Amino acid sequence: MRLTVRQATTQDAPALARLNWRWRVEERGQPGPDRASFLDFFSTWMIDHRATHLAFVAEVDDRLAGMAWLMLASRVPTPTRMDRRTGDIQSVYVVPELRGGGIGAALLDAVLAQARDRELEHVTVHSGERAVPLYLRSGFRDGQRWFQWRPSID
Image (cartoon, rainbow, N blue to C red; front, side, top):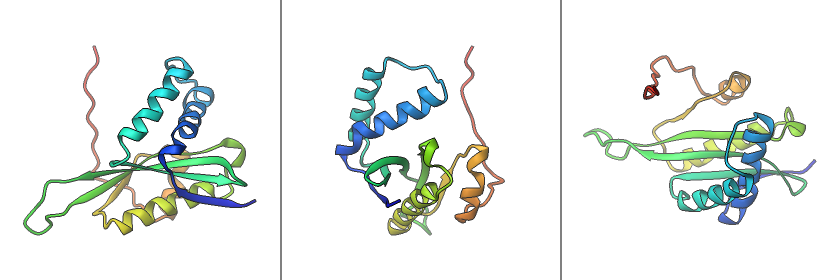
């Protein structure tokens, strides 16, 4: 098995859209628009957001095997830190038939290397239970001061 992890390009947008569709709709059963509309929207969205959402792909023997995203944001400057860039890891996914072989860890390593290169102040991730050990092994700590707000939907 030959594993390659690299930062995605805009040419990868259609393949990443198909991978996202497989994960969310085919595996999780999430409802959505028709497949063609989603693929078109996702590809356009990726191109429009390439400055703030860096995609990474994992390929096994030249076949797309997974993805991970690093969302970049800037926080309000302070007198002691005027450049306060942060990141949030999003949509880490490995195809089911290749899970457990280190692909997720390799994707996470690439994302965190980019975060270090960009000198991000911190990186967050919102994880499902199954992936928590991966993030803990990679140096994440369980946050105790994280709160979430969502608007009420009546």
